Image 1 (spheres, rainbow, N blue to C red):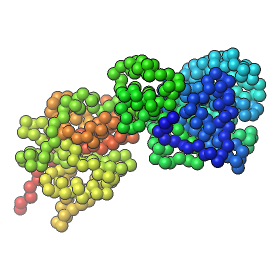
Image 2: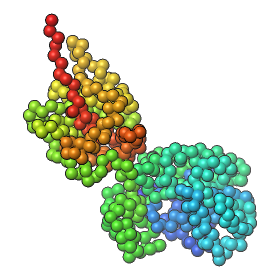
Image 3: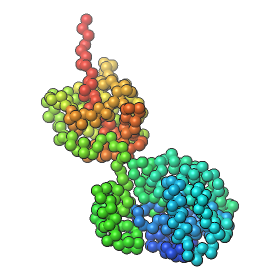
Image 4: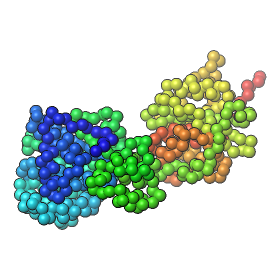
Length: 479
């Protein structure tokens, strides 16, 4: 079994993993190695309290790996730990959760565990199974979990990739207080399981959660498991997928994998996400279509090749001032504009010196937004003066209304062949990961709603706008 990252088994602690595995076998779904490993770690016992060491279990797996079977076994096992325990399974929608529950009920039929079942209820909105010890398992929509407010001993948030940050935080704010008191009441620590395949551009809850765990920000009472192909692996190489998929050779074989791949057709990103558990970093509402961007690329222009053509510099700052991008807009002899990314600087500390140098050396103005993460840098640049008290940087005036027109003007220019962009890898990545948000009939790049740096693309958009809105040259007033 190969695991991409996660929590190691602490052999100094005893575990109830074997008991969970025994229930899984009784349900007709014996645990395969990856499931057993998760069970053993998640069920480690804290000797000081005599109950679960971990209260949060995060699992990231590809599709077709048996995640649902592990969750069902864990729920049933948890229900057996005492009287009147409350277990909830939450999916994207109420229908998804109820469909999962119906499959669970079918799975239980005919097993020895049915003698422990008191009743299955299938009424709409009130599905549950109650056991002879008074414990229950109930399916529900994630939105209903957020407003539940009742005491719970185990909650599974399945397919967490579907949650926005706001929705995820709301759910956690609702369930954590209800679970914190269960140890004192029942003698068993409550657990929340967060399970999912890797996310996409809209997974603003699950993506940061995984990123933090991978970066080493792992709370003491959290264990996590990350299965899938390495970042540099080719998802089209089926041998690689077979090697890293935790269920390959146990639940299906390579001929079935070929069938799975054919079912995805030309959806390469979807295939990589489903069976390689690789995040889909594309955005659902891209600012610029991939084919348009590809067909409007030109070779970079060197300073010696400017030949006196008018230029304008542009600067843009990423959210939280993490990076500053500087681009140039070049007015060609035929009236078209070429935009070119020049630099991506870390933070904003060195940006004033670099921007001032460029504007001074090329006697060119600067255009940038005056609000949001750009405001502080623009104010600092505006305050810089020479020994005569004259501003070091001339600005292209840009109103709030102008800024909302910048993005659409750039896209229209690309479509009409009046704007091109110089080839640049960082700029390509910014375009692929930048999304937009609408304000009435106008739109702008959404910095927090995108999945990567937006400042490279934003600076190029501003550079193109500035190139066609340059301030008039001023001359000294002669008395």
